[in-house]
Length: 232
Image (tube, rainbow, N blue to C red; front, side, top):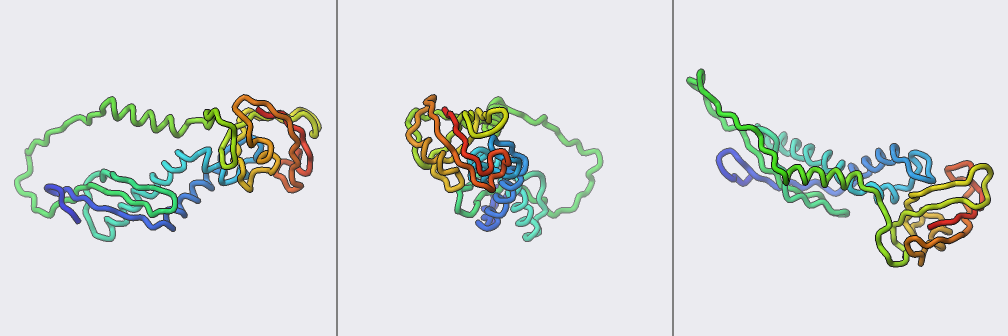
């Protein structure tokens, strides 16, 4: 274990890919239970849409679960008497790869304390810079950001998009409306009619087409129905 100075040490920790995948799937499942997306009952939205729509929040939650746990496990294995909170840096978190990061921390030295009564200990107020505040605000913005269409080019297979839909016919009662339905074009979990008709559309373009819902579709009102939609 490299010694930086005094009691400060630095070590690289590698978290196996299967452990990272397990935690990621656990977080996705938790988000899926709580997410409310147009066109899907709670807990029924495809995992691919959840991963795209809440990508930054999922990443943050996975790191918040794995990093401290991995460090504590290593510290327990090595019987380190860690003082304070470690500084975690050089985080490499990429899909399909083990998670790697470095931890800088201090270990309490072994010594005998004599004649300590009356010793004055200086105290310094923690300093928080404008840069620290800006960084935290940006992190919160990323987690709360909404997915919107910004690319001017026509949609193509593989794109993620948000569309506004309103039913024209095919269902009883009030029309079905959605202003922010997230779709992954070309994904097997996306209904074929959406894959077919959205390809080639440009932002703000309007189009009418029919969508046939499978008999086992999650919304009883749509199950087995052919619905005419107008989209943009």
